[in-house]
Image 1 (cartoon, rainbow, N blue to C red):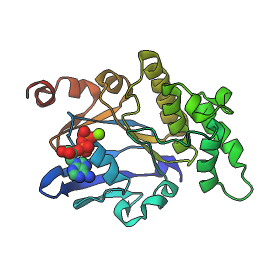
Image 2: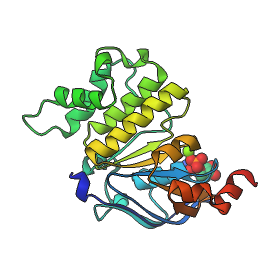
Image 3: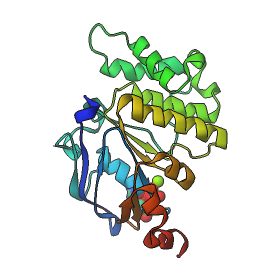
Length: 241
Ligand code: ADP
Ligand code: MG
């Protein structure tokens, strides 16, 4: 997929779990080549939104359009091939495979005939600065590097959009800085549109071009980091409960 022309639009998405309203009428756009932050207090519906966008947990109402196609109508395992990659809140790696093998498995699933999926995987490892650790078992990497390996695996699918659920969770400041550098490179060098869920508001404010704020399933604000920082409703949602 060509990242520059790709589109990802969330239209009036709602999601219920039995009686509980996890999301209610949320609309926003994830733009190619920009980082959109998705923030909000615990239980706000952020992970549910990532799952709704990627088609894992389809919306109860509204829809998500990926290049004009409703993601709920695409088989979940085919969504990555349509240009929508993601990582999960908890690390999901093949622990005993090498770093390179982890990424090659992903590259294999999209490689055209004649393409060398090991070379594609190596290129993805270069982006996240793991090329020197390619032969190490995945589970021997420090935590921050394992999280970058997950991003390399998603990148090897050559996405137009990447959804990252709490990529900096559990990272120390040095690991967080390395992650920010990688995400900035992905945005500017590949034109990929990123949607980043994150608790670390300092990271969000440094990294994002645009921020969407959820609270109790509803979108209470969106805007630039500057606008969100000064938004009274957002401040209230975070500290005034
Ligand atoms: P966040 O990621 O913002 O912390 P979540 O999207 O995980 O929030 O959850 C939003 C709300 O939906 C919470 O009240 C949570 O308990 C509920 N929820 C999420 N997934 C499920 C599920 N599969 N079944 C029932 N309730 C769920
Ligand atoms: Mg979550």
